[in-house]
Image (tube, rainbow, N blue to C red; front, side):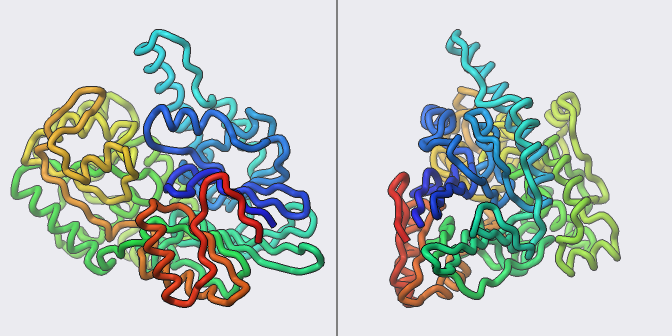
Length: 459
């Protein structure tokens, strides 16, 4: 087998990993690169491999950095099947349409700025065509995608429908197993069940996002959130939460519900200002079978886990703009998670200069994003091309992270310590990759390789 990473190698976005087995070419993930505008345009507009020679595509989960260029596949000639879980299939429908709208608006803005035609990456029509080719298989079902290559999805516990991809194949008469971790979740997180524990694999393609650090304890998550809420009320300010529309927003709302149930915080207005988040929350309600026991118990006692005493799910733009005039304490949850696009930019613009307000960061912020500059507490941040003072209080809560931390990653990877095993590290910034490689080697996993973009590995 030959494995080549064409994204998320030495970085955390644009996941694309090509497997070549017995003459068949299988693409694991087809994610969008997110970062500097020029670099993103260059990496996302074309593929560094022959799309029309692919035989199958497999998606680990619905986050755009893992699925965002799937509509480009058909635009470039791929007409085969795209395999994923049923929940991921449902999520892709709304997330890729949202992405198409972002591409269109972004192209229109660039045309106005540069006075020359700029085509969007893809259109809604490309998304509709793509969705015709998606096929959903539940966890634990084993199915053949090309001769002698079988796939099984196992719960990764990262976001709704997220999967580790087990690839069982026969090569030169020998049966082998590859495991693609996708993005690994954490144990005991709200909403979803814990990640599946693998028994064995010959080759592991493993994410490394937090390979250099652990998160705050999950047990402290709600206590920290309550502290942020009570402090904001005391200051008389708003809490602005940039949130990924998938999983993080739902986790925050669920945490607020549990705090309300315990009367740990007073009931205050909460606005979920993101049409995509509203649509995704509806999909969560369709897949309650994937919830963990704790969440199902809350549902028995208090009903819908995504309803609060005073919550409004905002769809249209007029209602979104109305939030600018609110002066009393409230919580505004809005996308996108890394503050690069979407309605969150308007809320940051209108609230970042007031020290009474709080910007609560609850997710990973990649390099060269506005979110990272906020985390770094830059004195000035640029929003819509205008520099603004960052006077709002910035709080970071990494306990909400849906990614496994360093200890959890090492526990996961340490299972594959045999001399004939190989662990390939992807989806991490250099510091995280190097730290995780060292940590795994200390645990006896000597065949640990940091993947480089476009550099094939023969296994």
